[in-house]
Image 1 (cartoon, helix red, strand yellow):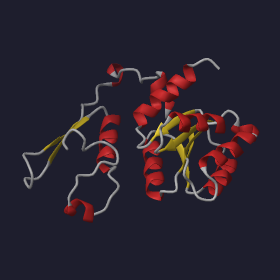
Image 2 (tube, rainbow, N blue to C red; image 1 turned 90 degrees about the vertical axis):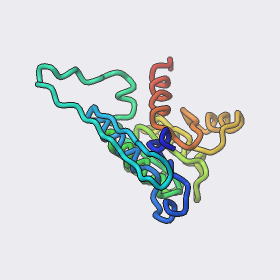
Image 3 (cartoon, helix red, strand yellow; image 1 turned 45 degrees about the horizontal axis):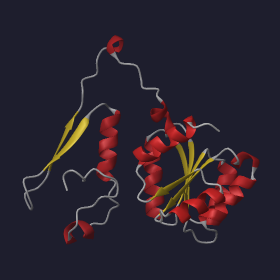
Image 4 (tube, rainbow, N blue to C red; image 1 turned 30 degrees about the vertical axis):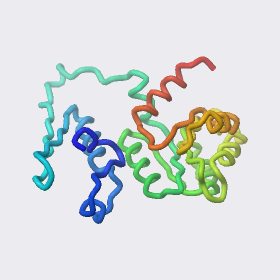
Length: 203
């Protein structure tokens, strides 16, 4: 598990770990926070029942005249400084994804069913909506349709989040007004690349 332990939602199997609960995002947050400071984190373990060691390396801050310019490429901006609505009937998943996006400097709202999603979207008017398809009250296709009916919603980027990735599923998402179709579990790095490609493609 050493090469996967920092992946989001990853948990080591075993009754001891599972009994403690958790979402499997703690180490992902650690890696992201350390990375924001230009550092690295490494996990070490000599085997079962021998404990684990986590080594964090942080650089010394150079004098101001030596500081490199901040990255301003499209990927660095794809998921930063946006108004984002996360919609998922799994409250833990929605909240944890919202926290991760918040760490990147976004303003985030969450909703847990289709009707709530429509109401929150109308008040918040997000630029990006990460929308689960299998929702109670209104499904994701219906929510997307209602958002697209609004003048403010025509330019929003809608991303379908679903466990289904067949051609028919992707076709249905396009017809409902989604810009992107992403199969769970969501990886933020992959989503950033998709958004960059979407923003750079001709309209």
